[in-house]
Length: 151
Figure 1: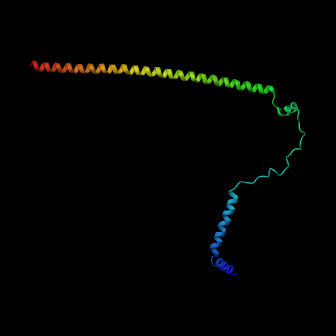
Figure 2: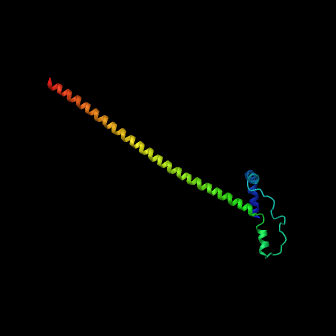
């Protein structure tokens, strides 16, 4: 009894606080029901969908007729032909791409060689020009010195 009287006194003293907490909890529960969780659909096991048991068939030819139903030999052959044709086309495309890559590599190698030869030629010309320039400077300084010595 003492516990109940203490509980009643606590609720009476803190009623506004407990009311606000209760409203917040109710709001959260309603919000969770509206927004969260997956919606429950109809029960898939509500209706009985079983078929009656059929007699056991041991004759292989009859079983094959049931098992291979809907698979015509001609449609299988057409599908196989189509797949074989597609495979051949893929093989041809892959061979062509390999050949194309080889040609690209060869042309890149040729173009690199051409560029290197051109660069070497340009370097030789530049070295020749520098040599001529140095020779010209040397000749002009020798000429200037010879004129100084002669005067």
